[in-house]
Length: 118
Length: 114
Image (cartoon, rainbow over all chains, first blue to last red):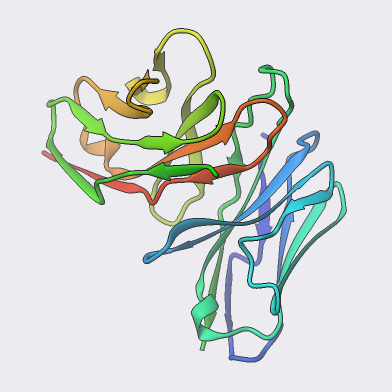
């Protein structure tokens, strides 16, 4: 059963520490998204990639967040240095998106990485 | 710019009654519209989508949604609610064509009382 895998599932760290979250998208999907879920902000789009190329990372705080896709099986989201306001659940999702209506972009989500920054 | 609005933070319905969860959107061109459901401590799961064609689309677990172009709405509906439908529901929009960006509404918590 194909699924998106995220690690770690839970992370507790102290302010100022570096945090790296990893995502293995579903094989064959060409688009990968990073979202952040908080009670106050709902589900925010942080960044997304198509065919491993970053298309938009305007939702991320540039000074501390970075997102990369070093190969087709791995996407990473890094926070350095972390701050308490970064505490949230971070979701990775992958899907097939193309101009044709055959690939309409319904997404498959991982189980999320719950980050707590003390 | 794309946007999605879910005007209700919470919807409460008695089991067996019909339910509606509202969604309105703004996007250039023809929209691709989606509904997802999230159970506690889980990722979002796809429910249904509208791409083109019939304005009433049917999805998983007996849910359906009605696309209304003039009102730019895509409300989620179910004729008879179950307690197990209680969850967080998200509406999402993608601009049609080559665009990839998919954004989500703020979510609506659906609570079905026995």
